[in-house]
Image 1 (spheres, rainbow, N blue to C red):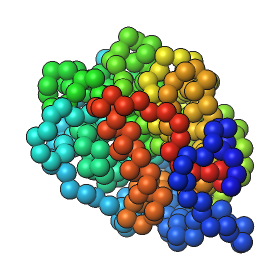
Image 2 (cartoon, rainbow, N blue to C red):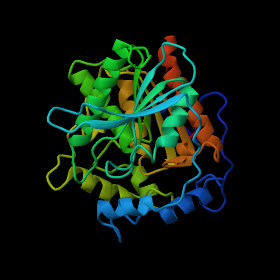
Image 3 (cartoon, helix red, strand yellow):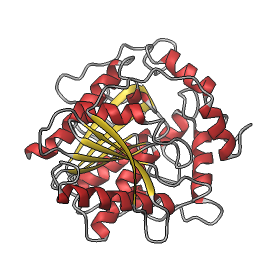
Image 4 (cartoon, rainbow, N blue to C red):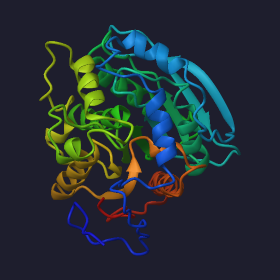
Length: 350
């Protein structure tokens, strides 16, 4: 088996994927799903150039087969946004039972800062709530290009501050010492930036950041942008379009809140980072794990070499998704027990 990209030994019990002989690095079980997702997804930057049209295309696509587990309660509400900005819609998921305290996960959906909403990521938020036993606050931050950078980052920080205040006041039935930022793709970028902003602005305290194939670098120059440019659902062309929408004509892609891969990462909370070998964003997630470790920040990284961007949303269909969900849930639950996370939790390089 190959060595890990971040230089660490393989975790015990890692199960390699069968070798492919057709040149396709994707798990065979994932190929039909990737092809179906690719066929339904808008041709961003090609025949589809406007965000409004891309959203219409996505709204017209049939259900994807994501699991939607039952939770104890779901509540839609509005919370205060940043100063001078509108209120933020959030959806609060509570696990069943009355066990207290619980972790609080402030969750930011993916979609390249441009697409998706509370409904598109309802199944993911439900799964996280059900599996981790945490209260999940899913945030509908403002989208680009109508609201370019830094609108989403300010919304993310406002939501984190609200959730932490609610936890401290007992409003969520959760532990104020176990507040977690989490997200997938662009939401992973926001989870990263919310933790940076909390450090830079004097709070609130964040116990853990869960970064699921995060979007961390506007430079888009990593090797996985080339090796995974096409053929695995999310493409390098999609990413170029997303960054153009998010930054606009005058946005600073080097700002650490836009590209946290280049930020000062000292004194940040522990992180659990999920990466997929067949994803343009794979290398930046791996590089962020390395940077955090070098700064003395505890990190676990669950790398799935034969998976694609978005795989974690399909635990009913993919073994690797079930494993990744369990690892994320364990990382979140560990914020309540005082267990420290360190090392890696699975996977080899693709």
